[in-house]
Image (cartoon, rainbow, N blue to C red; front, side):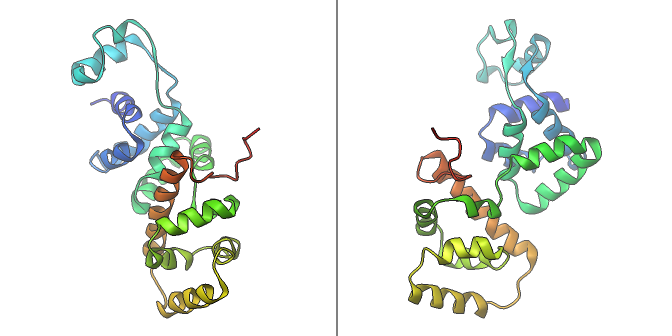
Amino acid sequence: EHPQVNAIILSVLDHQVAADVLNFLPEETRPEIIQRVASLETVQPSAMQELESIMKLQFSTNTSSKSSSFGGIKAAALIMNSTKTALEASIMGGLEKIDADLMQKIQDNMFTFENLVAVDNKGIQKLMSAVEQDLLMIAMKGASGEVQDRFFGNMSERARGMFRDEMNAKGLMRIAVVEDAQKKIMRIARKLSDSGDLVLGGGEDFV
């Protein structure tokens, strides 16, 4: 299908499902599809008519009679947050060639492991209880000192010492393995954020 139709479909899917679907689409079209997801604001009737022929069960019969709101930069960022590290790098690299400014905007809206430095102690504790310790050790090997301090600061002295020893005992690890572990933890963090158990970004938008 046309990249615009693909973009609309990805925009109405759950972002984790959309990330999985991306993996099955032709490699050369992925950056353009994400570009179109990020650029979507409204979908015109002609596009909706084409979409209805593909996904009749997803829309009511009168959907094409009006414009519909989908996508946007935040939707694109959510999808990219849920992709595997290698796929993310490939798509973002391709998107940079198409529209470097848009790529940067998407990247600015993505949460990375380093963003956890802004999460409060309660949120970090919730995350630690939801993540397997072995996975956290792998992820921490590639984290900045500030992020490591956020986690270590929420451990007892004894637990912190044991954690450091076991983490160091793992030795050198491939960057791809560490980044994949960080992605998995961020997916858990986003689920906790969706349920209100954790605030990504430190909660600066609260009043």
